[in-house]
Length: 172
Image (cartoon, rainbow, N blue to C red; front, top):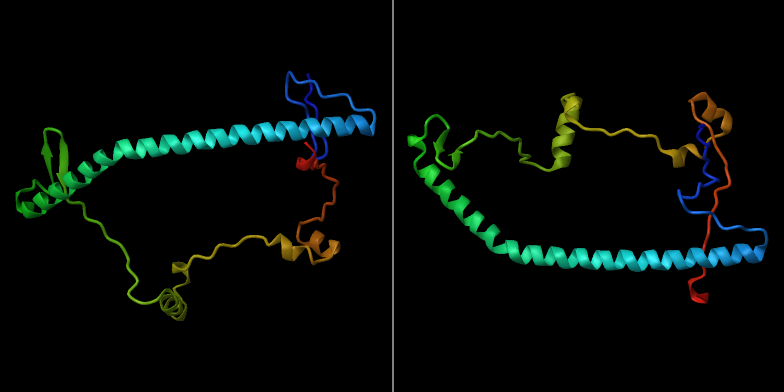
């Protein structure tokens, strides 16, 4: 069975849902009222869901607060102990019955001056590989060019009529 090609203008009805028959503007208005009813119901369901999620997050935060505080205190004590007994470590860590504790070597770069100063210094030395530059096509600027110019760079201006449905919430 061949798939139907869908465009931005035509939408397929979900499986099992028959699209309403529309043959007059009155039918279209009746169906639009149904769309508004569906949107309101979906908004209520989403608001209820978000409320339940917020409540669940608050409950989880309350239940987990004690464990998070105990974990932080235990890790701080373990770090202090490990640093005080660094000479006793077998290499950089110590295997224990319930896991392993130790010290990992970590190196990071810190900027001791402003970002602008460091960027200027990098450019002055030609260290451009140390500067991130994200390039992307600016379609808003391209919109000011002619269709011929767009064609030369592998672009095209496409104009299409996109369907929309605005419901009047006040009338419902």
